[in-house]
Image (cartoon, rainbow over all chains, first blue to last red; front, side, top):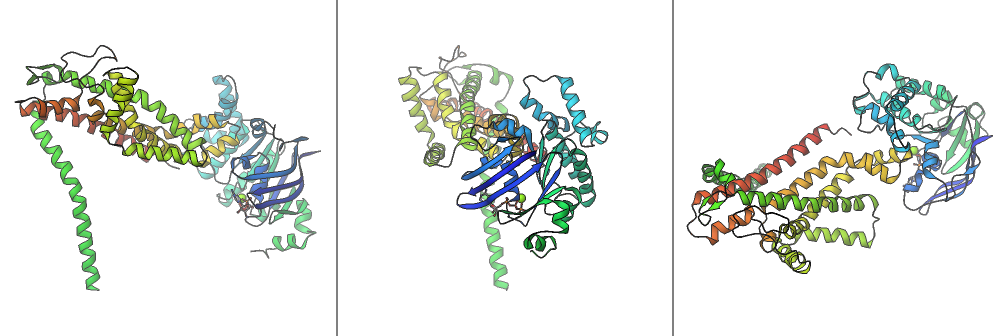
Length: 251
Length: 282
Ligand SMILES: Nc1ncnc2c1ncn2[C@@H]1O[C@H](COP(=O)(O)OP(=O)(O)OP(=O)(O)O)[C@@H](O)[C@H]1O
Ligand SMILES: [Mg+2]
């Protein structure tokens, strides 16, 4: 069963039609990559899944997005619950200007009725272990997160997200500010995480999509042109435009 | 070629002179006040009540009065100003009402201080029947410094990067939780700076307290917020123009204390701002 299913999803920024009749399905425990040229609506689609587009004035969405069979676009959707369930990793690593520790427990402090100190310690340890940062940072927990390297920051952001126990990880070009080595590490991490999470990654980097994803979708000018197994899309695209993009014939 | 160079030289010199012209009066004021005021400063001057028709003794009641007034003004203006700033920066939509409010704040900042005095007299002293009292004076000063506090607080709030709010919301925090845990803590230095600048302004103004609180001569400390009080700027005015034959030393001593108070507050504001800039890394 699909974790996320979109049916005839349309989105407008004011009068600009940014997503056009998107039908797609995202499976649990798989990594789905969304590729396409700049401005085609990848981020917009991703931000539908945690309703971050709601923050932008003049956005109108139509159609259905079923997450675990529940339409998240309905007006009575609990946004706090939705955003706990579908967490987002942003393009630029954006830790809060707080300590490593405080960054990770932010979600728990916000969501829990009462927070016990040892519970927080435990969350910090498990979250950091999940992103393979524990050994590096266990002695630097009180240091400012702004002092970490870019890659550590991005992994810390992922840890901060895992601490609120999401099901789904929405990643919007999470490696675009990282060097190849750091990128490889984050990709490795994604492969480990997919055992427990549903991962959707937006990427500009064709090799990255080919390397990490199980499924892939190609978008162009707000339309989802092709959607399927990554292998199929990269070796035998059905649509001419997909082929052109993958082989680099688009600007 | 040569002409452009000369024009540039002249323009540069003019700009430099203009800048220098700003520094000279400030420097002169400070030097003169220190030179003539400092010799008057001793423990007795700071801790004694005025004596012999204010021609001798100290200025303790005026110092205390000013501290009371400034504290009262901040107790009133900081919460209101901060809440207004939060509303304007975080909640308000760009509509007619918001623009009207912003316009009002800008204009409030430009109102002459004597008008605040009259306003305070009409509203607090007469209408609310607080009489000439610390309460009336504090409220009047509070209203006067509201624009400073709102404007600087709003700037501080708005300078917190959008990405922080975005992450916080994406982690399931509500808007208020985001403001409370992320936006406000990062805006505190800016808010503090604005508050202290407001304090400095409140401490130095004479006109707003003239009709609302200031006592000509009150050789004891105020007992409650419904009492009148002496205050440094008004006391300075009184001993300079209303009482004949006051020793120059006492006048300049009073000015010295007032100036020190205000400059000290500004200095604190500058230090906070500097420290914050140094630490800020986003
Ligand atoms: N807030 C907004 N208001 C109006 N139009 C917007 C807004 N955000 C995005 N758009 C437009 O919607 C389209 C899709 O934007 P989106 O950010 O989803 O593209 P993208 O595929 O993520 O691009 P990139 O690869 O550059 O990140 C673009 O044409 C963009 O100009
Ligand atoms: Mg994007």
